[in-house]
Length: 279
Image 1 (cartoon, one colour):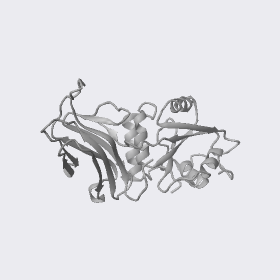
Image 2: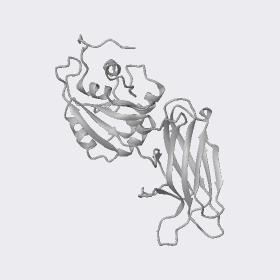
Image 3: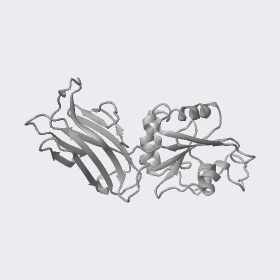
Image 4: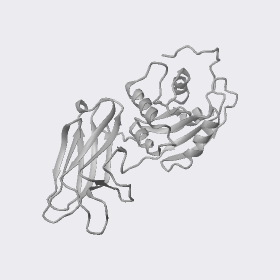
């Protein structure tokens, strides 16, 4: 799959110090890295060659050899800019199992991006490594770690309030989230939620995936809902998926909050059923 390089380049006998550092890290099964520059998803033969140096899978590709899930990731960033312009993009990285970002610092654009990483609460800027006379990678590389969100790892679209310390409220009678599947397999949807409580008016919740109901629940009172919902692989497409939440009613709470609320979620996440969390 290694395509011909545009110029004659001697392949290095010693890995870049950043690759050497990655090779020493212990990643969980299903975890990997993403090579980035001012281009959020780097591709090319040198990207695949780097995996031979650090023995770590990358979500990138080379030339026209794009896995389906890599194409979905490229399309996502094409419409949403880089990680600094949309910090919640780290939730997509978690769904891909991306533990580390390997930033190829080729110029000022990448240096500015690294500075933005240091201010992103969802990333932990770790270390930069000089090239040390490497004939293939003649520039520094920097490594940042994706900080997992244990409560929410999906992209909220509409029908949601601002994130609070305990969680977030659904606003109105419909809301949506998006998530990315990296391969065809079963996934688990975890929900921990409470309804807005109105006497003698039980709340209801139903969840749809591409127009088909995958879960429904009606509260008896104001009890907490704690449920793990198995989504079979036949219902899932590799790449972007969308869940639509429908609620029985919405109302203003009695505490003077002006929002029209329906259900409050303290946890809402999607994970692969093989026991590997999307980090």
